[in-house]
Image (cartoon, rainbow, N blue to C red; front, side, top):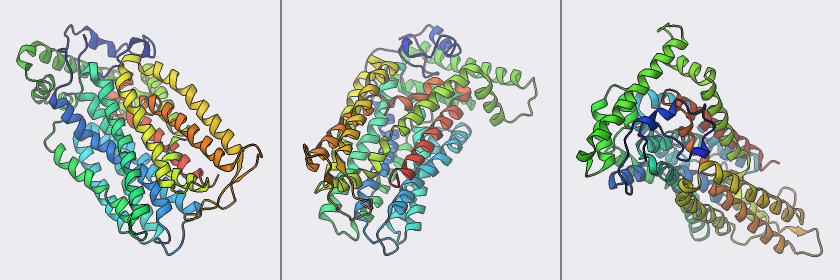
Length: 483
């Protein structure tokens, strides 16, 4: 495939916004070199697995709150949590992720991608310990807020880190591996939540649920200390020799036979950076006094193709959350308790398992089908699932005030032709259809947002798009239960 590593591109031509939108990106196609055929080497898989632990942490901390909310009892502030308490505990994570995403984009440009991931690991560990030791709602909100800052940084930097290290032919698959690790983290969270909710000490089980989130973060810290920075950032920082060594490891054992490829890739990155610096200087009319951050904002918002890429990335990230998926991740156990399922934490596992299974299907098909097509194929089925779910809920009557933790108030049927139990099954099946469709397309395509932006605005544009995701996530978490 005649494409160099320095600019993550959408691998299918039909997925591009239009010819003009990617005019600056297509220079990489003219390098005239091809990456060696074959599967990604051991080094690439180790990089992906070590960085993917961020996805595992992301998924675990978003999924574990579902079982925690129905297990916490009166452990916080000596009272049952009401809807407002649960909404605050849940939504504060998204709020601080929203605040951390743009900041992490600045840090990633200045200090590198890897240091930001390491910082997020430290926040994961600290946040997990604060949650486990909390005795009040305020303490739990503080712990969840710290974890939110970690999730916000990791959710932005990790896909960027993988995309900037992956060979072009497998970039989509390897970035989707990060999404797969998110869904795996959610599955693990639901399993651990079910174990502690059904078989653990009710007063301390939830503390183990949230505290165990520190272990993967510690493991990732150890692994990432042995891993490199990305070639693109190294070249931009004036460390082309180090970037060349990383590309050699990316190619594998026969790197000596591809010396021309390595030199061409590094040279093309250097040319791209010089051109972008020249364009930024022209954009400021030769005034060098403008800060790099202001130059980045100018390039992102004033250059038409960058602005259009930002609009599309933000729309996709906003749609990913405003479709309501994370209301299931946060409150599925609460919902299934209201619907009368005897073991709601185990029923919730079907949501995470469906998400995980169809994310694997997306992993093996996204580079073959294409980003745009897989979205167009899957979104109609999401719509069908939501309409079926609405139909199921229309057949039952939920009791008022039935969202308090610990309540197990059975629903009643409004229609004589169908029982409340049958209506609950309809809702469960429709949710599985919705989740399966979400996992195929909208659950992973928006996280490939780095493919939309050139290098000089990639961190800033991706950070803003990720912030849009967390803003929509915050709105869902804060309003779902009260509504």
